[in-house]
Image (cartoon, rainbow, N blue to C red):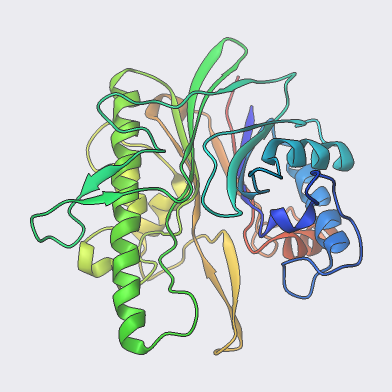
Length: 328
């Protein structure tokens, strides 16, 4: 079984309100890329990855006019993908939905949100963000997607994540940049504590668990991490057994000032250069780790990727797919 997580930059801009694919010469929301160019690149990437199930981060919008599921099914039909069914959870407050595109001949999938002692992800979580002794209400702008998944007699729990971005947006002063960055990191950490609490409930129940997606964070990613002692990724992985496992996160933790894998590539206009970061992860419960094989489909660092797929990866999104192959 191959599972993937893929943040598709502004996927929503490639569909009309009826969920139809717009493969034309009009500009996409991706810089200097037409909708046709981005769509054809995405088709090449999805076909190459050929996953049984893909967590689509920044999926098409869902509102009174638009449907995430309808758009993804239209894309799968247009691209000729075997992963042709889609499931969507709680709608977000943005045009970036978390959804799951999958092969119904290989997987049985249903949206199965949890509650109990840990609040449901469309609810409110209380956490003292500023250490003043008073807990604040935390909400997800993009509530995680909780799925019950089965294949060949194996049952899995899956939590799809698009955690809070820490970067300030728009023109702000240096003081406001620092203040907003710290506030956003607090919110991101609180969201990760919430996800970890849900993960611990599944692990305590002896369930096989996969937590995957874009965490907008990683060990050693920025200087503000020092204020809080650890990254959101470390929180979700856990410090005590049972821990979740992702080898790319472990590499980053072991080498904070050395070589580390990356899953995203952004253009920084002031510096006139690209910046790479490790933001996307697939974390497994201990029972799923033996025999599992992870891969970052990086256009420059993966020697199996040829020129055509390299160009498609660069045109399709500012993130690259991450996959894990689980033995039968």
